Image (cartoon, rainbow, N blue to C red):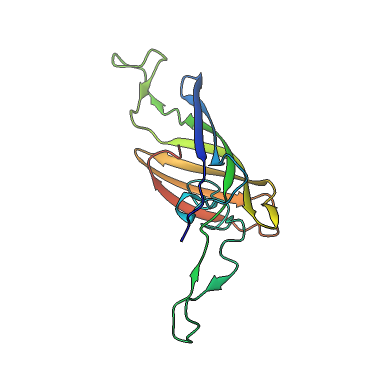
Length: 186
């Protein structure tokens, strides 16, 4: 049971800038967590990793050690263990994405797009992205800091479905992670 008072906040700032006829640069900075240096209840903690934050890392990969120790209430061998924490008490995430369109133009007739050809509506977009994040957790012994983690990736967005691949740039693992999202990343 968690009965200590806590104060938390979250800020999510996004900027979408058209940089060409079929190109957009999207930036996002989001941070949140404890405003004081006290641990939050698990339901207000944040774990990083996976398609929503750092897609180059496995889901819940950056949890500030929350899944490092499982406990059980009674100690019976057949009793299911659980984790006392969910993730980090404070986090910061930066995402940058460049989205460009494929320019399919055919012929040059009366129904053209003004550039001497036919244009296909709903053509796929290619995407290149970069993410950086960091998490902090507080307890009686001090502060646990995950360090700054980075990943890069690319993908293809067709209509409302995106297929992406991402690779972590920090840590020991450099495996490609593939994922599918219904809609844009952010």
